[in-house]
Length: 226
Image (cartoon, rainbow, N blue to C red; front, side, top):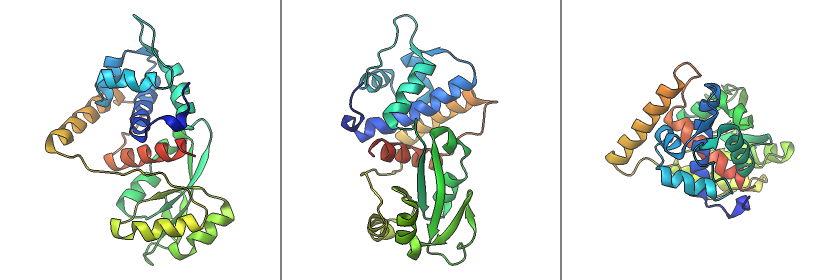
């Protein structure tokens, strides 16, 4: 397998999407999937799927495709989600709450242990199972609990100062941007891919809403870089 630190962040983000689709397939007792089938579930072109999987040594079996269990294990090792990683959330607004409330975090081996915000009305409440604490206490609390993974869901205007405060508490960051689709065409393509996945999930589990999906991709990229 290739050194996961050599894999570009864009590839890692796509691998996080593939991982979610493979988890869905596993819940429906699907043993094998072709690159075309994986592409139909994720909206990622089949050729790109093959290229991404080959980056860490997965080439599939001719006439059979990719074995779901093998791919899940390989991608988990690549993204380092075969080991539990505790993380803190900074910003308990809409995106933060969406991420904190997503039960699939446990399947990705992420554990939210603390949350921070600067809104006095939110202090003392919860984001998921984590108690929301004042952001002014973040550096000391990160050091106290030895938390290295931090997810920022704050306005862009507050991101730099918040990141610096988190780094002073021992956090590590990779450059990763959560973005909106560049165009209406891209937006429609993403929506169609999600609809295909929703149909595939039907009776499996609640779907990931777009905000949760974006945050999970960022988490996977951060974790793979540690």
